[in-house]
Amino acid sequence: MERYTLAASPNPYPDVTWRAAAATLKGHIGPVIAVAVFSDGRRAISASWDHTLKVWDLESRRVIVGFSGEGPLPACAVAPDGVAVIAGEVSGPVHFLRLEGV
Image (cartoon, rainbow, N blue to C red; front, side, top):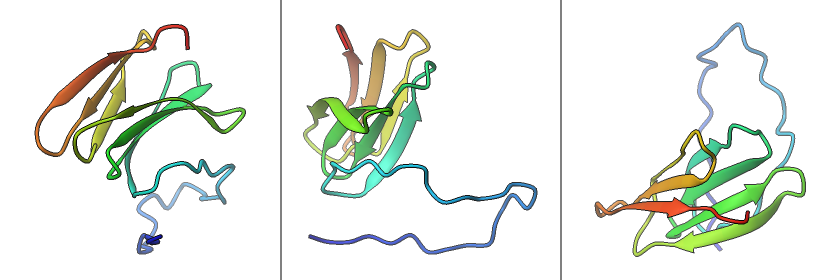
């Protein structure tokens, strides 16, 4: 399995104190390109170069549901209603998904 490392850069926000990660969510097999948090603060979505979008329960740190695209997914967003999720593929298609019963 490949490992990816982000190069450290100078702190662009000198008035902000950076702390260690509170949690690490594991499940993608490729680099995660985009993350969005639901307005309730209890869930998040992540879009990855591995062609998948995952919806996470942040308390349990588990995947609730996933979606697979045809290609890498470099963009994602959550609508204010917390039901609509949008994911964009690198090749152009944009997927509008509805989370029901989640």
